[in-house]
Image 1 (cartoon, rainbow over the protein chains, first blue to last red):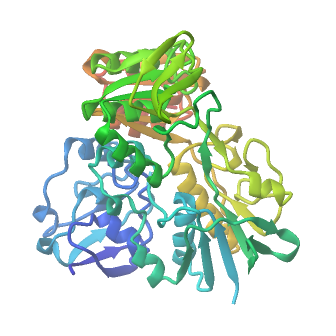
Image 2: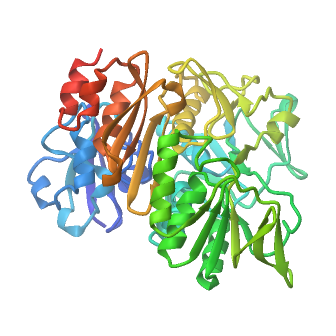
Length: 106
Length: 404
């Protein structure tokens, strides 16, 4: 199973395994990684699974959809590397991906 | 070894169990739910799960293995019969489970109709996965569906059923659909949308009973007219499940009364989700909400406080509804506004209706407008210039920066 390294805002690291096809949001919540609320359950409706993903991983991901981009655009902690974890499926191509968690979800 | 018992198997219950482990609680957790499956997401039931777009794995809050791995005891298909507060016990028939802290997350159930023909086969209510499994199987054989109740659940089902090719009627006893939850303008928008898609909406039309043949429903009686339908779905609101709490002598009043810590009138007992009547310090009044974000947030708050934390729950309510390709995202209550400002053009199917009170944003209904939804969450309670807000070419970030 591919692994994901989630890094909390305070630097705490969580290296966890996930099923291929599950979203990074599901991988986080299924492994009790704090910092991802995911209130809407992955429907791109709430933006409470905001994360940042730096290169080299960012460039391996499919670009954000228009809806995801709109949800991110008005996020006060928006960075150029921001994504919504519910919109990114885990695949073997991104085995080892590093995902940074923000201090707050809005 | 201490024990925390969670009564209920919905999203608040599932989130509370996860939050307890996340906060480092290592003792016994028992989650007792009357449904057959572990906690799952309820919103997709009337949307992507009904349409078949999502399967059961996709709606699970967490995989079943999660509970096993974290030693969270799941007692499914199990109904708690009483709470003995003097002895800190919950009773499942003759069986007793003792608790140190108890969370009541019993949710709500559909309000039922008691009219002539109500017990005919083919009349459904929609609250659980099992309900929707029955509805899906009935829908695959049906050509026509009559929905009693023009609320969000009814309209979401109408959209799915119409898209699946059924003849769909919606009966609403009030003068407009969504009357209880939104403004005339939004009601008119959704009325037009559904009519354009071929759904027959009947307002000012009360259901007075059901007609059937051989024990199966064939139509809905409204005054003198019968609307023929192979199946019926009733969506006329919910009732909070407070009976267990009431019988245990906890304070209830349109929900289980809790404070901002999600604590009930018994310091060992907390409650979260649809079943609670809770204070909202931002809105300055008590609320009972039918809302997933509320259930999840209250569950996190209750979990933290059951472990000795001091967490207050204070959040602006928000909701969403998917109908056809339209995503409606709502913040606050439009009824709190005294002035409406529309940004964008409803006929374009992309617009946001902001609601102001004393010049400050108190609510938004955003249709296919996620930016406006996100900005409304941050604008809540802040004064804005209405003409700037109404102009879709004004940058939302500039509006946010200048709001006071």
